[in-house]
Length: 327
Image 1 (cartoon, rainbow, N blue to C red):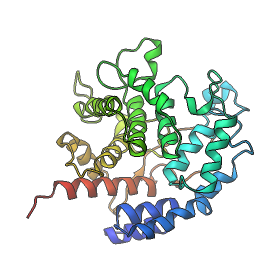
Image 2 (image 1 turned 90 degrees about the vertical axis):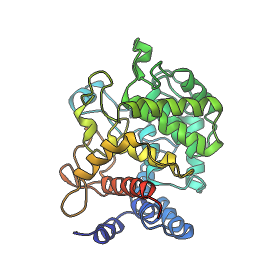
Image 3 (image 1 turned 180 degrees about the vertical axis):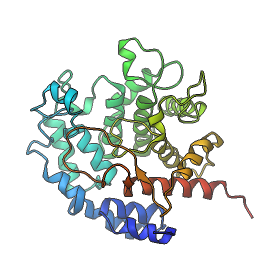
């Protein structure tokens, strides 16, 4: 692969969950064409495979956040398990399972009736207590047509003074975190797509964006040093974790409806994305969180990743197209 065309062919020679996004975001295919490909997520490839592991009661692995057979030693010795309902739902959203499909509607109904959060037994669609979890619950719920406005109201009220969010707020933290903030931002954006949002939710989302932009997506505000070197590495699936490619893809997605120009403070992160492109035109997977999964969707760290490449290519395409001078 030495040119964009061959990279596109490599991406298309993949799973429906990647192909439909390539068609929409990189090839500008007509809506009916990419929608037809997207419909295959329910019946073919990774989407169908993940759905095959679903329990009869609508959950995955018998639990909302952790599997029913979970032992805390697993988290310490192996890593956090990723097979329970909340992470499976998020992955189906990222795959692009059509919310209008019969399987999606049935899943939402069953989870609402049967799933309870491990932390306090709350009904699934009422949310938990941590901002990271609730941000993803809002994103998944809004995407799949659930009324998650009570969780949104809670998140708006939990915003830190510096503009973002932190799951450690309940333990006394008064500073936001990159990880918590990106999870909440994605949820608020999905909520706005579904409902238009509220003045308060839109204001909160703008403040969360400003939290990241003031730090150029990865730097400490106090010293200018990287807040975490791993923010500059690429992982997938991100789960709850932050990296600059996830943040850039969020800003791209948020700007698409209005066609707004990218904020110039994204420029340093964009340059880093460009610098990591491999000679064959792809981008690598640098690492992935340890822990139990249903199956892998990449070939492993230090190898070209279709998911990372897709996200990097559409981010750069958006940046370059929107910043191109009018002629």
